[in-house]
Amino acid sequence: MRFTPASPRGLYLGLLALLFLALPVAVFWRPGSFFFIEDDWDILSRMVSLPFWRFLAQPDGEVWMPFSRAVYYGMTRTFGERYDMLLLINCLAGGLLAFWFYLFLRQHLPSLTALVLGLFYGGAAALSSLTQVAFYNNALLCYNFFLLGLLLTHHYLQTGSRASLAGIAFCVWLSLISWNFTLLAVWALPLYIAVLGGKGERRKFYAVSAAVALPFLVFVLGYFTFAGFSAAASHNRGIVSGLPGPAYLLHWLLGACLSPFFYLFWGHYHYPVWAYVLGGATLAGCLALLWRWGDLQEKRLCLWALILNGLPFFLVSLARYQRGVNQAYAPRYAVYTLMGALILLGTAWVIAKRHWRLGPAIRLLPLVALALMIGGQIGGLSRWEKLYGGMSRASKKFYLALDVSGQGLPGAPGDLVPPQFWYPERIHLTWGEAVNIRRFLSGAPGRNKPPRT
Image 1: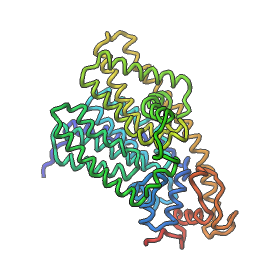
Image 2: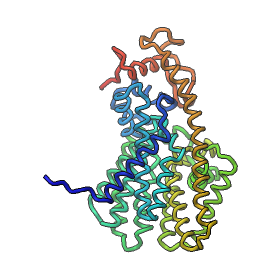
Image 3: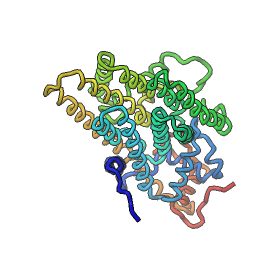
């Protein structure tokens, strides 16, 4: 039997894929340093208290995400107390996300520029907020499926493939039922056709719009069936009772436009002053270069990138602006919005190289900027590891003190556990649930399994 050797292009992409998968593992995976914290305990308490299908269908506050709940259930059933394995899976999902983003950048930017920006994205410290807490596999799944849908949208624009159209609908559906951040973001897919395809692609715009609308409507039906109308207002009172004011617009502006550029230079939402200065200057500089020298296609790409960042915050800001502007800086949002920021940054650099004489100062500029960006990610990463490491040590100590027999507890099984490493306004864990979680994860004989009915 004869085998056809792999093409150089296929081998090159395969090696790059391995590099992208390995990068978050090397940067974020710290075996033995982290344990179940915050929302992990919330989802585990539901897991041991509810029948399986009710566990999948029940909303998490205002969010309905049955697919990622099923994935989390499978992960914890497989690995139990081995939290490091859950985080390893998250790191690999983060690497896959960065690889999809790199493949998208290759369609619009020079190969080396796309590679540098893709690798920066894969090692950005904001990603630690998703890779170092197992619960946030929901956001990683959501973003992965969204980017796959975006790649299929680009392929459909180029080829008109019906299989791509079906793939877009499937990826949109999986993205929405993994986490609801992309509820409005998925409409950036048909807008990609409208903005970059031009008037000659009207038929393809309608086709992609239909491919997005179908899973969108099915999701909305499922959301109101299983979560109910009140779930949307579970975090903010009066979310639909009146028009939002300036606080909403400020939240949207910070989250969609400014925060992503601050995250370029500091990987934690407690930014130093210089990160504000450099981030704001970078945004202004990119827009100025684009306006002055960008060609029509470059302007369209950057317009779409701004739409990409802005769309989800029309809903997110509505659900969060009453809690203050700090919510606009949430790192799990920045993992998404960094995509738009890096598209603008890469396009601006292409324009600058084309129109400026490449003297020594100009040639050093991207290296200096990249050094500042990488230094900011390293500085921000240490903040996350200190925060999550401290919470994890307290969590592990609490967990190991739980006797699987339920004896010697500080309170009765129905009493609430005092807040320790979670948000007291969100998570209400009883001593009985805590013991059942220990039984479930440790595989103790006679453990309480989630009911099947």
